[in-house]
Image (cartoon, rainbow, N blue to C red):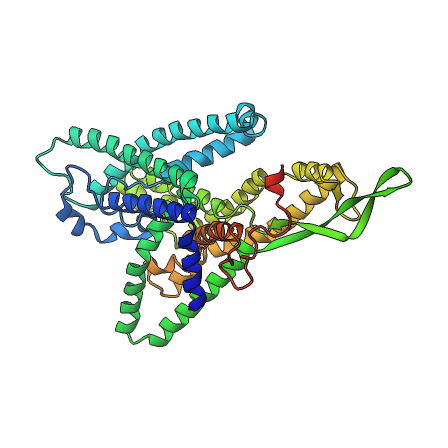
Length: 455
């Protein structure tokens, strides 16, 4: 406890870090405040007495992602998910369209700024479509939700604009947190919504189990949840170390030569899950599309057949598609982040090499092979964790609490919390303070050489 208090004092003594944390918390508070501002023309009483199933299934999951804003019919009801969908589309276009490939790989910072602008405009277009679907959904799920005093045309037009503005404002908040705060802003906005929903889900599960005298089952559930969290941390932090050897300049007889020194070694840390939480976010964003389509078809078609199963996160088709998407996006995002050719060029500039591997193309091929080998089990384990909530629900866990047994909620929370803590630790270590863990460094943070910063 004394160590914990000392660490907090060290964090608060660093002015820049303190300002960043306060700035981040302030913007997160603004985002959460927007989750309780109801859209104009919506009758709040109708939201409380709405359809019983309005919070179930995939819609309930989306409600958790927005911290309750979805079922509150708030101005932030769509959250940041349209921006995530737009990012997916832009990333995929980078593999198929030469123009986007050039922006991603050849035009540097200018290209990234252009891609950012394209993503923002695409977010506006997607939000306009999803806003219409959302208004259709709340009218169907909450009878009498629209005030009779407001013309239906005015209600639709004004609220589509407001929902779009809410998403754009949330996107702006996320970018400001990333630039001036601590952590990844977009991921933090999703995480804060999930965390806000956790106490309600936990208390509902405790009340449900204790009401049936299932104290032992409740303890087993919580123990399994802890085990899943530990396994997820191992997945997020796991690395494969590729040893490298630096060449040292040896002087003699007026000439110099580069001679390998056995003691001058380091390693390249390749993460088992280099893509982080992005495959989960991307896959989940695509899984929301069937729910959007369901709002534009007949009620019978939306409640039966494949479309209905893809809207139920406990169904077999949903989990098969979700698992495949997670695996595919893990490979895609890893390919975008890990560039073996850049590693090979960096090693060449540093007069270093991988023992037993020739420099240049052979080094790039070796790193590519190792990355592919560790990404395969990593992606499958990531996919398995992502569908664990369906198994938890099958064993009788409350659906609102089951999604914390893995899946998007747990992976996003673990990944984002670890990333934020690692950034805080880097500020501490730069000021010569102890880190957040006993060893002074969080495992998996900047172990080995810092390749990215050098290229």
